[in-house]
Length: 74
Image: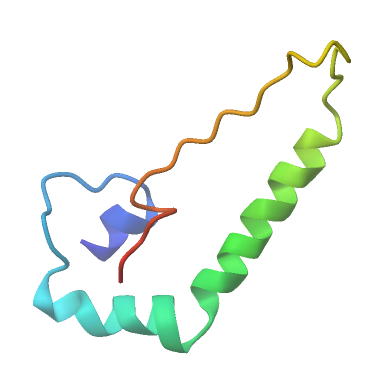
């Protein structure tokens, strides 16, 4: 399960398996790694955004895919 999560290949799981709960808790809450990983991802996106050329006509748009990663309830 944990390897599937880390490689983005998680399928058919409704809940975190009980033997993985402490790992998820440490990652999400107590060790700060989730926050650090999120910061790195945000910096990568910001670097990319700086390369974009906007048309300047006011019709440019940002589309955000809000999913369980962004709206985590753990």
